[in-house]
Length: 421
Image (cartoon, rainbow, N blue to C red; front, side):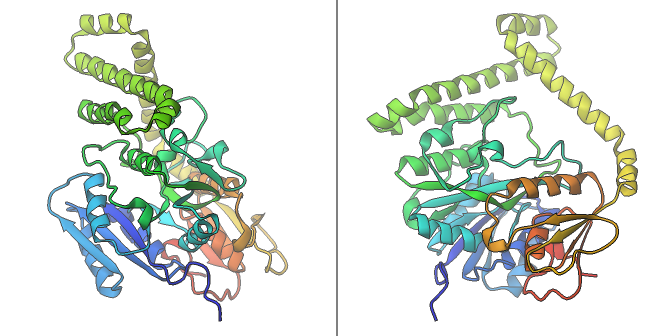
């Protein structure tokens, strides 16, 4: 019998963890559920003291494919991933964060696509999910998600849209990377912001062929500790140093292609540095000096108003949290996922949502984005009746309840260990 595409090729899954205990079991379970069974998971724990190590040791005892690397003091995500990369043995490398979830068929599908495209790296879209209310339906690629596989280059990776503008931030993606294309490349451990983007950029500058795929198989968890925060002066200076060093790493043609984008990114970082100087002046209550800084750079005042407004909105949402939770209970919703092998749709309360066959669901990211958004706003009960419905249920991990309708024979369990009933 012919071997399925990709089988026999080991994938090394790289996972950095620091204080991720509340979400770690979900991430580990999504790895263990992969339909591509030839994998190893290397978790580099970065000085956790929240029970993460006990969880990791328990899982490693149960599955010999899991390797745990311990580091006593926090060293940052770049250093943690580098330790995991040094231990990896696979033909391919996959990055997965310890608070996120992968769809069970993700690695198999990414590997099949990479081999079909003769790619050095492939990346799928990432759907945002949360147990707290999301501000709106979102995925990382958003309107930039391709309808067919699309190759990207260094300019695409380097270009980062500013707040309020459209466009995808490709540095957030978690690609599957051919080990041979990676060679000796490692993360820049001086960076604690933008380290992923820098890593992928240097991979592309080495000549690697990276493709974006028209589907979303990665669930990106949003929670208070993962939300964007203001960068420190030290972080910005490290990012600026990396940007200043970039032109010296480029060929003549690359320099021509990237010159203007590099200048734009350098200016953005310098503006952030100026804002940090303003914030420090305000913290010292030197209001006259702060006013002079704003008069010299009026954009700083606008940015200050933006941050103040965001904080006011956040406080307002926090004060209404209890009421929102009670409203969520009252606004419970039921969604019936209807797959192609389902019989008659269920009668009674709930909305029927038709889901595609798992083997042909590329381009349906907007459906998963909407369902994750709805699951964050109210107590969502999801039912499924066939394999396609179960595959779709994995994409809604924040649902309050996930239940099978009748007997659904599958090697997979519903996401987050919920029991059918």
